[in-house]
Structures are given as structure tokens and as C-alpha cells.
Image 1 (cartoon, each protein chain N blue to C red):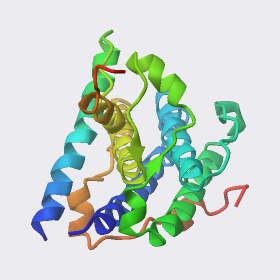
Image 2: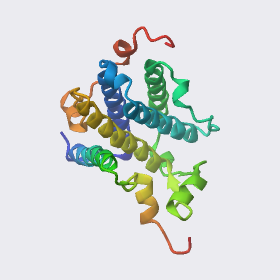
Image 3: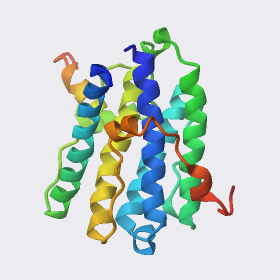
Length: 50
Length: 180
């Protein structure tokens, strides 16, 4: 197994379990944040001119 | 490892994992009729199909409603249809295409949620988004399956690698479904 594949697994594993935590937060009456990749990209590239 | 190989593996894994989750759902009537699970399966496939339309520069069709899939297997078949078309799209990709800027038809809705216009995105970023989004919601479905007393499937990326990158087995899953 290549190191790159292990890194892919690490990223994917985190997404899977954050999804589970988000669902359980909602069950408990909380609003989970939006952690979509595109929301992250938007946050990272945000410039104040917008 | 180049970007094309990463995308290809993520998409092959996504299809395999989607099919495994569907198999668990369809093997238990409680799960098959659970609204939390059905809503998330519909959401996964709506987002997959939506981005595929954008990638192929096709106009977005009207968003399907849960009532468009009176039989759960129809929704599974619609998911399979996505993966078949997406696999052909991925097979024709090259590195330069991945960096191409993409116009998102629902950018106005995103702008409301972000409270500002969304940043430009590339084809590659949206393809990673689809794989990641599907994984996020499959995780939620697995939680719900466990709540209903079902054993959720092992769908980790590393499990898929250890198993030798198996293909999704839709044929045995959807054999006999009315719309196939």
C-alpha cells in the first residue's frame, strides 16, 4: 500500500466519522456546522473584497 | 500518485461503498423504510447527479422528490445510474481538465449560506467534494443502521484497498427491481 493511499484513507475516515458526529449532534438538538469541502474552500479563499 | 489516480480511486471506492450501504439498507425492512436513511440516500444521489450535470455542462433537471421513488430500489437504481455515467466521465479525464474553473448553477443559494459570493472552484475540487460528501452521509446512515439494530457495513477506504479494490455489486443487489 502506498503512503498516498494511507493519506487518502486518513482523510476519508475523518469525513465518515465527522458525518456521524454531525448526525448525533442534530439528534441532541444542536446544529452541526457545515464541513463540506467546498465550504472549506470558500472559507480558505475568502477575501474581504467579497 | 497523480490527481487523476486519486480521483479514480475515490470514485471507485465511492461506488463500492454506496452499493454496500444500499445492500444493508435493503436487507432490513426497518432500515428500508426509515425516513432518516431514505432522506440521506436521496441527498447523496441528488448531489452526485447534480454535480455530474454540471461537469457534463448539462442543464440541471428539477430536483427529484422522495415521492419520485415510491419503491426504495428505484432510488438505488438511480444511484447506480449515476455511478455508471460518472465512471465514464472519470475515465475520460486528464490533469488539465481537473484545474478548469467551474460555474455552479446553485451559487446564489451558496452565497446566502456563506453570506458572501462563493469562491471560484475547479472541476477537481468539486469531484473531491462529491466523494467527500457521499462519505459524510454514508457515515450518518451507518449510525442510523446501528440504532435500528443492523450491523453497518465496513466501507472504509483502507478496507476497499485491502480487499483488492472490488467493484460494486449492483447486479445481485438490484436483480428484479422493476425499473431495470
